[in-house]
Length: 510
Image (cartoon, rainbow, N blue to C red; front, side, top):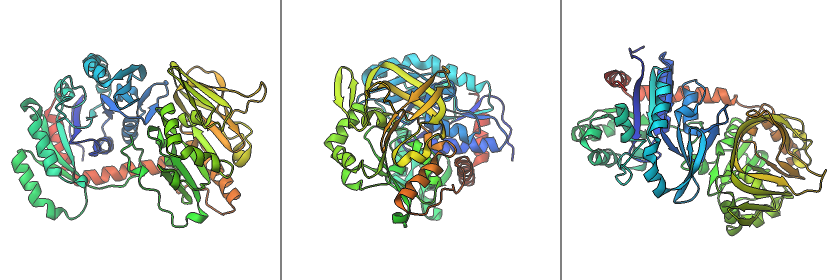
């Protein structure tokens, strides 16, 4: 059914806590509105995540809004996420504005500075609003963090600026959802509370009939309707950050001895782990995230992923016992480092005047400066040796997003680049990465998504292992994602009062 809306309408999803399900519910509404015939775009004024994305213009944004843009069937744009914070420590973050690095700030300094970000936030929102019928806005964390409410730019501060109607989402799977919702409302100021137009209970398991008395009491105490009870869903969609369940649940594969075992080391500052989502599409591949050295074993492929803090994660590998374990299995398995993982495989890492010894498995060194590379690349793999030699010459594409310049320490003429690529932003042709025997390093995120790379990789590992496996995807990644977005939309549409949601959208001029 097509409900009537005018231009520049909006709705905002806020949560009682981080990981309450705001991102997925916002994606669901993006898909529903798109299915209903509207042009819709997601928006999150400030995102904090290590899992980021590079747009076609070479600009950086949070992956949650990329996922929501996919749900809306539109191209991702930094307008959807004008402010991105990438934590560099427990008390500081790299601040990215409109896709470019502003600098690194302590939490205290950023708290004082963020009021200066209203112009880029509102400019981005207005640009999206001028081109779409509906904007689905996502908050961050909880609006009831009273220590952060001053100069708030992402929750009720933004809702008040835009006069946006708000749906407040609670996570029943963690328990205490009634206290979450009521407590959040109690801590809001009257003007803020007046913008909340409905409550959503998310991640519900079980018989909704048993929940009915609680919903009635919740509605009475809150004087607000519960507009949806959304069931717990397991979906094959990209996750935003380290709260993902992907790290704690490996894809089930009972025939593990005859399958391809890929182990990804779960670094403390792991980033861009969406690089490995594609492996979920192959029935004979088992992907697991390993946080303890004793769990590693001898996988068919060991991957050291991207990281926001290369030196710190190298120290963690040493202190946790991973360094010795990686070295000992390097001769028996293929080892691959991506971005920060590539830097870790090298001989040394120099950052802020400090020198950190790397794993020493590749003859390279990395020196960090103030510049940051953000670009999309395409090209071909070099003539590789070792276990991955069958991948030689394959076409690859993806994106780079890193600080630090990595240089070869080989003798002149002895360099062994992993790939030859062209920078889409500058047009420059260059060498990427390095390999030495069965050790491979690259800066290319998304390299496994390129056509032909995964089948060739799986086939090469299977032949070495002496097993027969399928190299055919169950479905393409795009097809799987589209089906998952449709399933998400179908589930949320059936679980929420969509006529009421259209009514509140129509009642507000954002």
